[in-house]
Length: 66
Image (cartoon, rainbow, N blue to C red; front, side):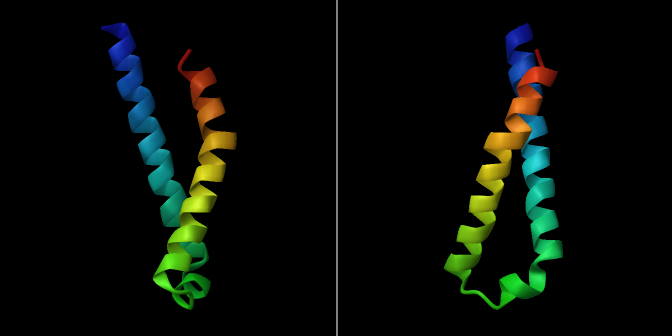
């Protein structure tokens, strides 16, 4: 029971942080991204999101939810 609650909390926290990262990218780089094709725009946003989530966010969350 405790493990499933911890997994749910980690999932929700990661989702909220991923949403914040995507929203920030769109706000900060909106003009530059709008000049790109949709495929290139998706590549830039998803690549940045994955890099930040894997190298910054998830190590922090895994330590925080221990």
